[in-house]
Image (tube, rainbow, N blue to C red):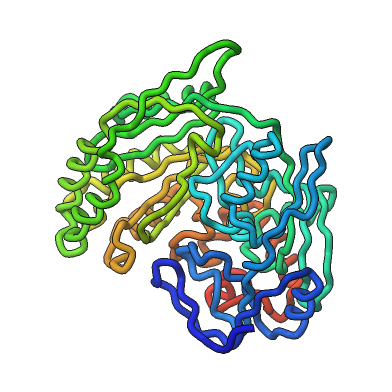
Length: 432
């Protein structure tokens, strides 16, 4: 146990004092800690841009609970502790000859953080990561250790709970046989990909668009399995691409004071780093997941049903290109696709959805980055849902109409944790 201190998020935009920081090594020890605590949150790796992690008297770090508890070779199921990093989980799964069918963009977050906030990948069959969970172990407010299985109705709440239904210590994933993808990347004009994106989604196993605002281009990424006997094509990215982050930091340094400079910076970055066609080949993890995030960012992300995307995007592009406001957006804005699921707080609950990420490359200037506000305004107008771990200002009045199972989730939370042990001040505003 650590003494009182100050918890800081990875970009230091969120900071909270705490009374104690504990690092349990078992479910039983975690149970005792939860039972004795008046307010408690799990800190994970601190990557969230939303204020969901700390702000309670007691903090739990599962940095010592990172083990594989069980593997079932016949059913391809693996049970792991939630402190494990996603990178370690995926490497372990691949070493067994398996794959988790849909992976997020980064691998430096904990398993627990990934599932409780709805971390997701993209593609024709891609879902939120937690949709592949068949069982989980959760510690309730009184310290009870509970097993939730895929036959329990409650699993649809626990698959995306933002940590307000209990402390999850272990989860079981259903895996598929390992597979490889040929991944092709190229710049495509907005006028083209906007006409073809629905067909592209249907035709490509992996599909993603890095939209480049102020340039009229998107960088389209497609991935598919090769036919038997077909050889992969390899066209590496230009060596200069490794300097993209450095150039971005330099160019965007001036945009908080001079927002309109963003448009020119984006055109320069597009020309330097998003103009080449590339081909790669590898596992889903090897070919599509970023293995590091070398600089701090601030992020927002919103989702919209397929049927509303075209109208939303048309308005979004006009507003972000307008000189009448300061909402100039850094590149890229990440467009991904999530297949519908049944998790009550999922971005894709009962509907296939498109997601758009909005990034500020200068984290400490996030409050002056007007694109966040403009994006939120437009998505709410079209019925969009925010990513639980990303930046947004909406409260229950805005959120309740967006989720068909909202009332059921709130009722379940109140029945499980009537005293709000798992809520910090930010989460109380949303879920109390």
